[in-house]
Image 1 (cartoon, rainbow, N blue to C red):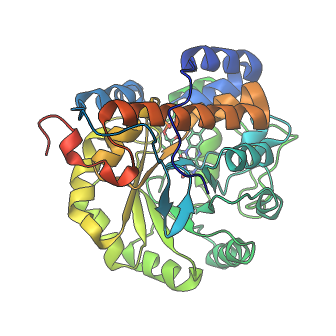
Image 2: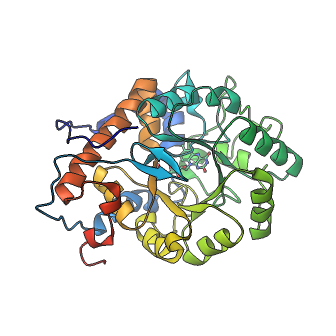
Length: 365
Ligand SMILES: Cc1cc2nc3c(=O)[nH]c(=O)nc-3n(C[C@H](O)[C@H](O)[C@H](O)COP(=O)(O)O)c2cc1C
């Protein structure tokens, strides 16, 4: 376990340049799948820029010679509050696919959440586990027997938590997927779901094809069913309302992930930068709240924690790092974010994660 460390030498990482290089490496089809949002893609930009509304109010004269970013997630020690978000189809980015991502995350001490739409079997990815937590994302399928089997496999393979995604009962109107003709290439498979998601015919985009197998009739009662079935903690991903968060906890969830699916579902939805505070306030100490969407700078991590998040999930930057550098690219991205998080904390006058609270946000405490 990492202890407190001094701030490392300053290192620049140009995320925009990395995205451009990823586009060149991925080609247009895969890049439009990874980068796209829903409808007119207004939310895609706001997801990033809305974090800017939370201005930090640094403290001074607080010994910041050593900074400790370690914390816990669902009771597990972790070097820093960074997790890799569940994203589908890593096989589009790199031949080693989710194994490379999982190894890169583990090398850099980040938690890893495997998408159930991964191109690598969940048992194989489990073999790439390090000391940091590894969880798995789930969609409840229309075929409840297949869902039950999948949940049993996930728990049996040692994944520490289930992350149930609830913001995709149907596919968003993914304009870039439609216009870019995104389909699952013939050499890639969805081994965790192959029985449930068979139709590759395309024309409507990958997500529209996959969501045909998802159960749009899901309710809080089904969440209770899943919590009983899982035997491991269940986090609910895709919540932006305080009332929904509390209902999920009443149904037995261990926590929620404030998310709008990376702006890929409802373009008119609220940004997570704006939704997080009210959800975290309502949940209080009852459970853990996580957040993703547009987190690009270490200051965004501090903002999210100050608003009440336990940790943050990183989506597209990890995909671009995978596409450009494989396992090493992923670990370099996370090492950079974790190192620069220490600098941002020092500049804010906080030496440990538990010192980050709402009073760091100007005018918001
Ligand atoms: C290419 C791509 C695929 C995704 N696949 C999934 C998925 O399979 N399951 C899921 O719950 N969320 C999925 N998401 C949403 C991410 O988990 C996360 O909410 C989002 O990417 C965070 O926003 P960011 O990309 O701005 O960091 C996907 C996002 C992207 C960009």
